[in-house]
Amino acid sequence: MKGAGGLLSPAGKRRVCTSMKILFVCTGNTCRSPMAQALFTQMAQDSGITFTASSAGLAAMPGQPAAEYAVKACKALGADLSAHRSKSLLQEDLASTDLFVVMTMQHAQALMKLGVAKNKIYILYVPDPFGGNLETYTQCCKEIRRQLATLLELIKKQEQKRTDE
Image (cartoon, rainbow, N blue to C red; front, side, top):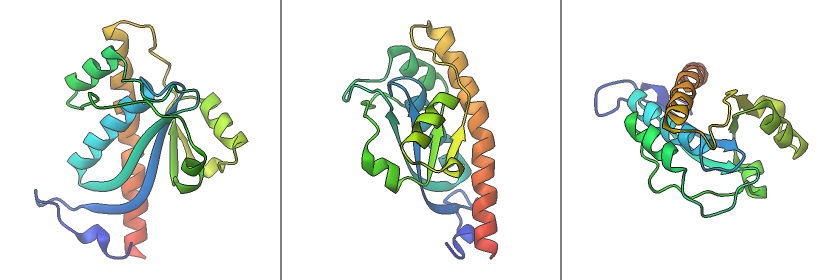
């Protein structure tokens, strides 16, 4: 998007505009992927980045709320998961998503078997907190946030290169 990197956010920060569609993927879409989506959305907004993001599960039961401890752990870090409802990965997600952010190598392999190109997958390597206590979810949230900071920097650099061309 030519010139978009020069826009200023209301806070006067440089805003990076991207039409990138990001899909966060885990197994059940009640813990890791919704936490990652909520945290990334918060971090990106704080950094002045605009994008489209959602989450899905490879084996999700649609309509389930986020795990109670996932909601609490995210809330403690300033992200809101209260309205989340799980959704399954759909065929249209495969075609319309620019970047799949997965939690494990197994998730990446499952996506590649469905035809997703390797270069469209970013792996966070985050263990599943399912069944754990609040501390387990809090540590998971912090690890997701730490790894998302790296992803956010990569996106910023990619978009800056694109606007400089």
